[in-house]
Length: 352
Ligand SMILES: *Cc1c(COP(=O)(O)O)cnc(C)c1O
Image 1 (cartoon, rainbow, N blue to C red):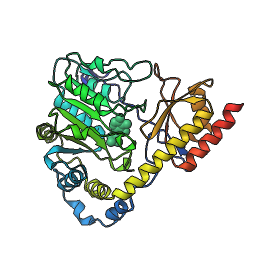
Image 2: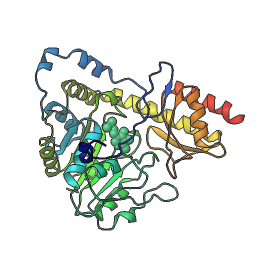
Image 3: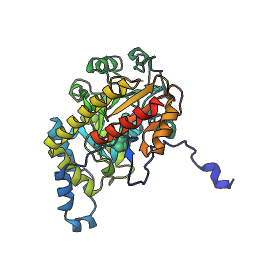
Image 4: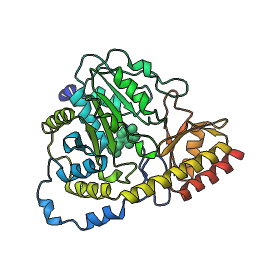
């Protein structure tokens, strides 16, 4: 070991799903949208004044924030934007979780949360989901330094209604409660409507799933202006120009393309419901997903075996080699065509 290595920060990084570089594959492993971004987004990027790239982008992202504020009917002071919701969530952890009491989030949830708490040296505790993979709200009644709930949760796909979120807020009035709504557009009701009642609620959303813009890296948080101000202060103490000009342009155009957004999300919901019926016939079971993915297990064939068999035919799904998850697959909803090919393969494989 080199002497300076003693001073390195040692962390166990988040492991993202594979991004294989194959031309002929069915990619159902990272919950991306199978449809292209709105034509308006592509047009807006093409129409950009490239000369402008010599200048720094607007650090306040005024245009983007205005487009988001118009969409959700909130004020601009209630919005924070970042480089994907990962950036927004990381910034929120850094800003709000400075108590000596533990931050609470489920044992099975988005696996970046414990990576950030470790990185930022935030104490945390992970109450277990119940047998049916539901969050038990009573676990969040104890004293804590903050609460993080992904709703719908990942990788379980389970959505809890707003009464559930309200109950968690009622029991946690002295800390910031973050609700990560990466998948809310696929059927749930957003907690944004609770922001006016609860000054300590921060709702986080992303362009990566429902808006087909994972490659652009845009996420945002909506909350009381005092929360947003505190996050801005931290951001401007670290890196002012996080959002690049192209992302700002794409983000504005995407928010304005409302019809296209509705059309894509409805197609994904219909395809999801079809896939559920077909998987059910093949002996799979799964919670009633309100996301763009299914969390499935099979009555006789182990998940790991299915994962490997699918991989051999270039169908990529996600497998987690972790306790309570290791007999499940997380399958993103692709196009109808892609899901038909998945079902076709599985019916052949499972019969053998
Ligand atoms: C995908 C995802 C995110 C992060 O998405 P970004 O691409 O960084 O916006 C955050 N939380 C959950 C639960 C997710 O599934």
